[in-house]
Length: 190
Image 1 (cartoon, rainbow, N blue to C red):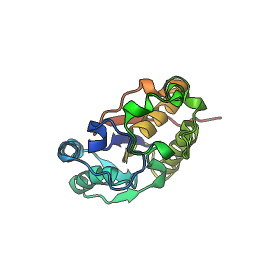
Image 2 (cartoon, rainbow, N blue to C red):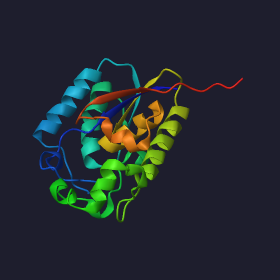
Image 3 (cartoon, rainbow, N blue to C red):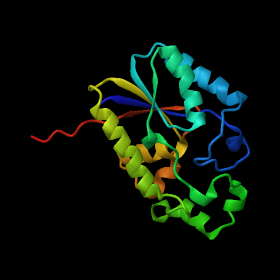
Image 4 (cartoon, rainbow, N blue to C red):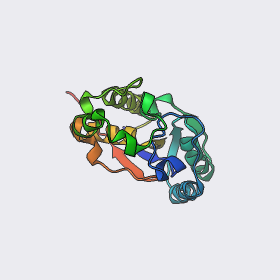
């Protein structure tokens, strides 16, 4: 299977304001996020990357653009890399959400949670892992591919592939504009 470089989008004002952007349209990188995206592109410029895939949300595409330019590769949009659908929680401040009874479930038993009007973490994990499996099937073993996504989908994918129970996925930390290398070995059955 290829080596996945999972890149979280750069900073935006929702992050700095402790708000949950979810899938809201029009959430763009702020000045710091643009600088972060340019640094990731500079870091990856000499890497032998074969393809770049991105979530369709603006903040991911704005992170992907300088990477694509640095590597002279097109950015291909993949819906499976999109942020978790937090439904009615989109745009809300984390401080207010922490007061809800459902917040405790988010923090202690996320495997049992389905966001009001949105998806569950289990559904999101299946979606992101299915997307990565599909992308892996399109590439040769040991190729390097870049996927620009969001914190929770990246954490969910890593948790699945390292065997971490879903209820513990939030123990993983994925900073804005970070690169998480995921090398998934193929299972060979004789």
